[in-house]
Length: 246
Image (cartoon, rainbow, N blue to C red; front, side):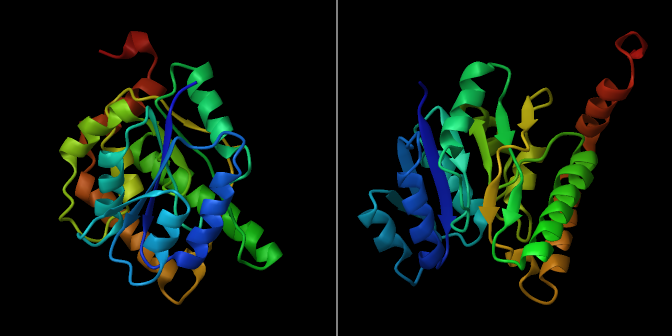
């Protein structure tokens, strides 16, 4: 057995959060700790979380990057799991995550895809495939590693201090999960498991320009992190036989 903390950044998400907390309480492997990061809520999110037994911390700096970092700072478990208030995990989600880390000492971080449960059935399937392809394939190619997705990710806590030291939480308009992925040390073992699937709200498709804005944020995140030698070195190890790597 290992210990698990679930971190959830929240801003006025009481309706979604109530469902998530209920699903977390029904997990076949319940979390040792749930940290809800209040990022300036004016609704009942914080009160609802406390009533459910979650630990609530307050982060005054607006934005998911600062809120997620505050949650990771406060987490005391060996494995930190991150999701959003609108994430809908399967009953064995945390058990499956724990089994990955226990059975393979080589896994440092883990992520998986999502399905958009609030879209029309056919459109939801197409949107889910499109988003997963764009995120994990296109962005994965850009950073030469599997990118972690904030709605469905887990990592060993020992990774956090090095990532934390590199973060600039004053930078606005970047994706925290992609930024986290870019700052992992070269050689970190990140696993994508398509069976580790969660439900997610299709907010990125909810309004005019929303998807375009998300793409701009992704590009801004990549520019913020630069190409750097790490990307080339990772691609070089994948593509060039060891005897030719001089």
